[in-house]
Image (cartoon, rainbow, N blue to C red; front, side):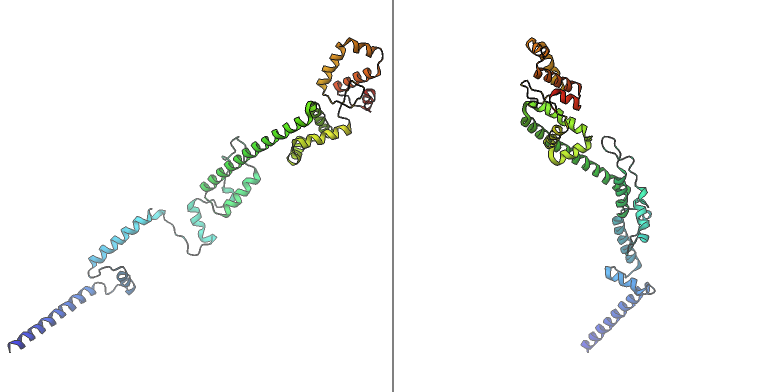
Length: 298
Protein backbone atom coordinates (compact mmCIF):
# COMPACT_ATOMS: atom_id res chain seq x y z
CA UNK A 1 0.00 0.00 0.00
CA UNK A 2 2.84 2.33 0.87
CA UNK A 3 4.42 1.72 -2.55
CA UNK A 4 1.29 2.56 -4.42
CA UNK A 5 0.92 5.80 -2.48
CA UNK A 6 4.48 6.88 -3.37
CA UNK A 7 3.92 6.10 -7.06
CA UNK A 8 0.71 8.06 -7.10
CA UNK A 9 2.43 11.01 -5.44
CA UNK A 10 5.26 10.95 -7.99
CA UNK A 11 2.83 10.84 -10.88
CA UNK A 12 0.91 13.76 -9.48
CA UNK A 13 4.11 15.76 -9.07
CA UNK A 14 5.15 15.07 -12.66
CA UNK A 15 1.76 16.09 -13.95
CA UNK A 16 1.91 19.28 -11.95
CA UNK A 17 5.41 20.09 -13.27
CA UNK A 18 4.31 19.51 -16.87
CA UNK A 19 1.32 21.71 -16.36
CA UNK A 20 3.50 24.42 -14.88
CA UNK A 21 5.93 24.21 -17.81
CA UNK A 22 3.11 24.36 -20.32
CA UNK A 23 1.62 27.31 -18.51
CA UNK A 24 4.99 29.10 -18.50
CA UNK A 25 5.54 28.40 -22.19
CA UNK A 26 2.08 29.61 -23.03
CA UNK A 27 2.70 32.72 -20.99
CA UNK A 28 6.05 33.40 -22.75
CA UNK A 29 4.62 32.79 -26.21
CA UNK A 30 1.74 35.10 -25.57
CA UNK A 31 3.94 38.27 -25.77
CA UNK A 32 4.96 37.70 -29.43
CA UNK A 33 1.81 35.95 -30.63
CA UNK A 34 1.01 38.89 -32.91
CA UNK A 35 4.57 39.11 -34.35
CA UNK A 36 4.78 37.92 -38.02
CA UNK A 37 5.98 34.37 -38.37
CA UNK A 38 8.71 35.54 -40.78
CA UNK A 39 10.17 37.78 -38.09
CA UNK A 40 10.02 35.03 -35.49
CA UNK A 41 11.77 32.75 -37.97
CA UNK A 42 14.63 35.26 -38.33
CA UNK A 43 14.99 35.38 -34.54
CA UNK A 44 15.26 31.63 -34.53
CA UNK A 45 17.82 31.66 -37.40
CA UNK A 46 20.02 34.04 -35.42
CA UNK A 47 19.55 31.96 -32.27
CA UNK A 48 18.04 34.77 -30.26
CA UNK A 49 16.35 33.96 -26.93
CA UNK A 50 12.73 34.96 -27.43
CA UNK A 51 11.48 33.84 -24.07
CA UNK A 52 11.02 37.44 -22.99
CA UNK A 53 10.80 40.82 -24.73
CA UNK A 54 13.86 41.87 -22.78
CA UNK A 55 16.01 39.13 -24.28
CA UNK A 56 14.93 40.00 -27.84
CA UNK A 57 15.55 43.72 -27.23
CA UNK A 58 19.08 43.05 -25.99
CA UNK A 59 19.86 40.75 -28.94
CA UNK A 60 18.48 43.22 -31.50
CA UNK A 61 20.43 46.13 -29.98
CA UNK A 62 23.71 44.20 -30.09
CA UNK A 63 23.05 43.24 -33.69
CA UNK A 64 22.45 46.88 -34.71
CA UNK A 65 25.58 48.02 -32.91
CA UNK A 66 27.50 45.47 -34.95
CA UNK A 67 25.99 46.84 -38.18
CA UNK A 68 26.99 50.39 -37.21
CA UNK A 69 30.63 49.40 -36.91
CA UNK A 70 30.56 48.23 -40.56
CA UNK A 71 28.67 51.23 -41.93
CA UNK A 72 31.47 53.67 -41.12
CA UNK A 73 29.36 56.73 -41.98
CA UNK A 74 26.19 58.48 -40.88
CA UNK A 75 22.97 57.47 -42.59
CA UNK A 76 22.82 60.72 -44.59
CA UNK A 77 26.18 59.87 -46.14
CA UNK A 78 25.11 56.44 -47.31
CA UNK A 79 23.67 55.67 -50.73
CA UNK A 80 22.14 52.66 -52.37
CA UNK A 81 23.73 50.77 -55.26
CA UNK A 82 21.00 49.41 -57.58
CA UNK A 83 20.89 45.64 -58.00
CA UNK A 84 20.55 46.10 -61.77
CA UNK A 85 22.65 49.22 -62.52
CA UNK A 86 21.97 51.33 -65.59
CA UNK A 87 22.78 54.92 -66.54
CA UNK A 88 19.54 56.30 -65.12
CA UNK A 89 19.67 54.41 -61.82
CA UNK A 90 23.37 55.10 -61.32
CA UNK A 91 23.14 58.83 -62.09
CA UNK A 92 22.59 59.77 -58.44
CA UNK A 93 25.40 57.49 -57.34
CA UNK A 94 27.83 59.05 -59.82
CA UNK A 95 26.76 62.52 -58.71
CA UNK A 96 27.44 61.66 -55.06
CA UNK A 97 30.87 60.31 -56.03
CA UNK A 98 31.77 63.56 -57.78
CA UNK A 99 31.52 62.44 -61.41
CA UNK A 100 30.78 65.33 -63.81
CA UNK A 101 27.44 64.94 -65.59
CA UNK A 102 28.98 65.78 -69.00
CA UNK A 103 32.44 65.65 -70.66
CA UNK A 104 32.84 69.42 -70.43
CA UNK A 105 32.87 69.02 -66.65
CA UNK A 106 36.48 67.81 -66.83
CA UNK A 107 38.70 70.90 -66.76
CA UNK A 108 42.41 70.67 -67.57
CA UNK A 109 43.34 74.38 -67.51
CA UNK A 110 45.53 73.93 -64.44
CA UNK A 111 47.25 70.82 -65.79
CA UNK A 112 50.25 71.67 -67.97
CA UNK A 113 53.62 70.32 -69.02
CA UNK A 114 56.61 71.20 -66.84
CA UNK A 115 57.67 73.91 -69.30
CA UNK A 116 54.28 75.62 -68.89
CA UNK A 117 52.94 74.45 -72.24
CA UNK A 118 49.22 73.67 -72.24
CA UNK A 119 47.81 70.30 -73.26
CA UNK A 120 46.71 70.01 -76.89
CA UNK A 121 43.01 70.23 -77.72
CA UNK A 122 42.89 66.81 -79.40
CA UNK A 123 44.53 65.26 -76.35
CA UNK A 124 42.16 66.88 -73.83
CA UNK A 125 39.11 66.08 -75.99
CA UNK A 126 40.13 62.41 -76.00
CA UNK A 127 40.65 62.50 -72.23
CA UNK A 128 37.22 64.05 -71.63
CA UNK A 129 35.52 61.44 -73.79
CA UNK A 130 37.31 58.58 -72.03
CA UNK A 131 36.71 59.89 -68.51
CA UNK A 132 33.03 60.52 -69.27
CA UNK A 133 32.54 56.99 -70.61
CA UNK A 134 34.23 55.43 -67.59
CA UNK A 135 32.48 57.74 -65.08
CA UNK A 136 35.77 58.86 -63.57
CA UNK A 137 35.57 61.32 -60.70
CA UNK A 138 37.19 64.72 -61.18
CA UNK A 139 39.92 63.79 -58.69
CA UNK A 140 40.72 60.53 -60.51
CA UNK A 141 40.69 62.30 -63.89
CA UNK A 142 43.14 64.95 -62.66
CA UNK A 143 45.51 62.43 -61.11
CA UNK A 144 45.40 60.21 -64.21
CA UNK A 145 46.17 63.19 -66.44
CA UNK A 146 49.13 64.21 -64.26
CA UNK A 147 50.50 60.68 -64.56
CA UNK A 148 50.09 60.72 -68.35
CA UNK A 149 51.90 64.07 -68.57
CA UNK A 150 54.77 62.68 -66.51
CA UNK A 151 55.04 59.56 -68.67
CA UNK A 152 55.00 61.61 -71.91
CA UNK A 153 57.74 63.93 -70.63
CA UNK A 154 59.88 60.99 -69.52
CA UNK A 155 59.44 59.35 -72.93
CA UNK A 156 60.30 62.61 -74.72
CA UNK A 157 63.43 63.01 -72.60
CA UNK A 158 64.55 59.43 -73.25
CA UNK A 159 63.80 59.75 -76.97
CA UNK A 160 65.66 63.05 -77.22
CA UNK A 161 68.70 61.62 -75.43
CA UNK A 162 68.74 58.60 -77.75
CA UNK A 163 68.42 60.81 -80.83
CA UNK A 164 71.22 63.08 -79.62
CA UNK A 165 73.51 60.13 -79.01
CA UNK A 166 72.74 58.74 -82.46
CA UNK A 167 73.33 62.16 -84.03
CA UNK A 168 76.75 62.48 -82.38
CA UNK A 169 77.74 59.05 -83.70
CA UNK A 170 76.63 59.95 -87.24
CA UNK A 171 78.33 63.35 -87.00
CA UNK A 172 81.65 61.79 -86.02
CA UNK A 173 81.34 59.13 -88.75
CA UNK A 174 80.78 61.85 -91.35
CA UNK A 175 83.71 63.89 -90.07
CA UNK A 176 86.01 60.87 -90.38
CA UNK A 177 84.64 60.06 -93.84
CA UNK A 178 85.03 63.58 -95.19
CA UNK A 179 88.37 64.18 -93.49
CA UNK A 180 89.98 67.60 -93.91
CA UNK A 181 87.26 68.66 -96.36
CA UNK A 182 84.53 68.26 -93.73
CA UNK A 183 83.78 71.96 -93.17
CA UNK A 184 83.82 72.76 -96.86
CA UNK A 185 81.63 69.82 -97.84
CA UNK A 186 79.21 70.57 -95.01
CA UNK A 187 78.99 74.15 -96.26
CA UNK A 188 78.23 72.95 -99.80
CA UNK A 189 75.65 70.42 -98.61
CA UNK A 190 73.82 73.04 -96.55
CA UNK A 191 73.96 75.47 -99.44
CA UNK A 192 72.34 72.88 -101.70
CA UNK A 193 69.60 72.25 -99.15
CA UNK A 194 68.96 75.99 -98.94
CA UNK A 195 68.90 76.32 -102.72
CA UNK A 196 66.30 73.57 -102.90
CA UNK A 197 64.17 75.32 -100.29
CA UNK A 198 64.35 72.40 -97.84
CA UNK A 199 62.96 73.39 -94.43
CA UNK A 200 64.39 72.34 -91.08
CA UNK A 201 61.39 70.09 -90.44
CA UNK A 202 61.87 68.37 -93.80
CA UNK A 203 65.57 67.86 -93.14
CA UNK A 204 64.83 66.53 -89.63
CA UNK A 205 62.36 64.06 -91.13
CA UNK A 206 64.93 62.87 -93.67
CA UNK A 207 67.49 62.63 -90.89
CA UNK A 208 65.27 60.25 -88.93
CA UNK A 209 65.07 58.03 -92.00
CA UNK A 210 68.62 57.99 -93.40
CA UNK A 211 70.60 59.67 -90.61
CA UNK A 212 72.57 62.92 -90.45
CA UNK A 213 75.42 61.50 -92.51
CA UNK A 214 73.01 60.16 -95.13
CA UNK A 215 71.28 63.52 -95.49
CA UNK A 216 74.53 65.46 -95.79
CA UNK A 217 75.95 63.05 -98.37
CA UNK A 218 72.74 63.34 -100.36
CA UNK A 219 72.82 67.14 -100.40
CA UNK A 220 76.57 67.15 -101.15
CA UNK A 221 75.88 65.02 -104.22
CA UNK A 222 73.09 67.38 -105.24
CA UNK A 223 75.41 70.36 -104.74
CA UNK A 224 77.75 69.06 -107.46
CA UNK A 225 74.78 68.89 -109.85
CA UNK A 226 73.30 72.33 -109.19
CA UNK A 227 76.58 74.23 -108.83
CA UNK A 228 76.47 74.98 -105.12
CA UNK A 229 79.93 73.47 -104.66
CA UNK A 230 83.02 75.63 -105.28
CA UNK A 231 86.40 74.02 -106.03
CA UNK A 232 89.83 75.57 -106.10
CA UNK A 233 93.17 73.97 -106.97
CA UNK A 234 96.65 75.34 -107.25
CA UNK A 235 97.60 72.98 -110.05
CA UNK A 236 95.17 74.22 -112.69
CA UNK A 237 92.66 71.43 -112.04
CA UNK A 238 89.56 73.29 -110.77
CA UNK A 239 87.75 70.29 -109.28
CA UNK A 240 90.09 68.86 -106.68
CA UNK A 241 89.41 70.63 -103.40
CA UNK A 242 86.20 72.03 -101.96
CA UNK A 243 86.59 75.08 -99.71
CA UNK A 244 84.34 77.44 -97.80
CA UNK A 245 84.05 81.20 -98.17
CA UNK A 246 86.24 81.71 -95.10
CA UNK A 247 88.88 79.36 -96.45
CA UNK A 248 88.77 81.19 -99.78
CA UNK A 249 89.40 84.52 -98.04
CA UNK A 250 92.41 83.09 -96.19
CA UNK A 251 93.83 81.57 -99.38
CA UNK A 252 93.30 84.75 -101.41
CA UNK A 253 95.17 86.80 -98.79
CA UNK A 254 98.03 84.29 -98.83
CA UNK A 255 98.26 84.58 -102.62
CA UNK A 256 98.32 88.37 -102.44
CA UNK A 257 101.15 88.19 -99.93
CA UNK A 258 103.11 85.86 -102.26
CA UNK A 259 105.22 88.10 -104.55
CA UNK A 260 106.01 85.31 -107.00
CA UNK A 261 102.29 84.53 -107.34
CA UNK A 262 101.62 88.21 -107.88
CA UNK A 263 104.08 88.29 -110.74
CA UNK A 264 102.40 85.29 -112.36
CA UNK A 265 98.97 86.94 -111.99
CA UNK A 266 100.06 90.33 -113.40
CA UNK A 267 101.96 88.64 -116.21
CA UNK A 268 98.68 87.09 -117.36
CA UNK A 269 99.17 83.51 -116.12
CA UNK A 270 95.88 81.77 -117.11
CA UNK A 271 95.76 79.33 -114.16
CA UNK A 272 96.61 82.06 -111.67
CA UNK A 273 93.86 84.34 -112.96
CA UNK A 274 91.32 81.45 -112.97
CA UNK A 275 92.17 80.58 -109.39
CA UNK A 276 91.79 84.16 -108.21
CA UNK A 277 88.49 84.46 -110.09
CA UNK A 278 87.23 81.27 -108.47
CA UNK A 279 88.23 82.53 -105.01
CA UNK A 280 86.45 85.82 -105.59
CA UNK A 281 83.33 83.95 -106.74
CA UNK A 282 83.30 81.87 -103.57
CA UNK A 283 83.85 84.90 -101.33
CA UNK A 284 81.11 86.88 -103.05
CA UNK A 285 78.72 83.93 -103.04
CA UNK A 286 78.43 84.39 -106.81
CA UNK A 287 77.41 81.15 -108.50
CA UNK A 288 76.22 82.46 -111.82
CA UNK A 289 77.00 80.78 -115.11
CA UNK A 290 79.27 83.71 -115.97
CA UNK A 291 81.36 83.38 -112.82
CA UNK A 292 81.69 79.64 -113.31
CA UNK A 293 82.85 80.17 -116.88
CA UNK A 294 85.29 82.80 -115.65
CA UNK A 295 86.68 80.47 -112.98
CA UNK A 296 86.99 77.54 -115.37
CA UNK A 297 84.34 75.39 -113.67
CA UNK A 298 81.68 75.34 -116.36
